[in-house]
Length: 197
Image (cartoon, rainbow, N blue to C red; front, side, top):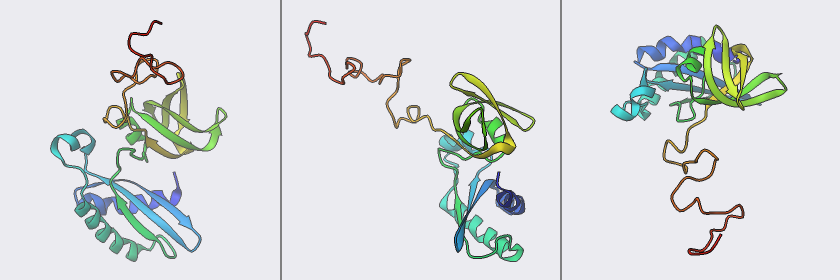
């Protein structure tokens, strides 16, 4: 991933860990005359227990990290010029910054942008199969695809909106599985009750 973001992550990790949190990674987004430094924090093990115990990242956590990190960034000065610091929880479309994070979410679907094209693609969406050394194994469109971690520019989990209750469930054919929705024909109209087929 981006060199400056990696260096900043390494610099700030001990400070964030001292607050009992985990620094998942950083995004450094330079723009003319300014930049954005976005830090993603989480509680260690939060993905397994957040719903059960309500122990996700809070606004107070983000503010505490922002205060501590700002002081360190002022002293170390890794970014020349003006920048805006943002501290965020990973959210449901969690970014992935390290091979260990891909391994943690094996079986989940990720959307990935590549630095260099591989098999004719710069972007892919596929299921994370596993991690071996610094290579991430995906299943994309039913086919295996292995990508060197160094070739990954950005990666995020793709939320299962139906499992979260935020989208209709789909049956095996991909149609809406909600009761009353299966009788629609290809044109989107429903046959009237009692009509002969």
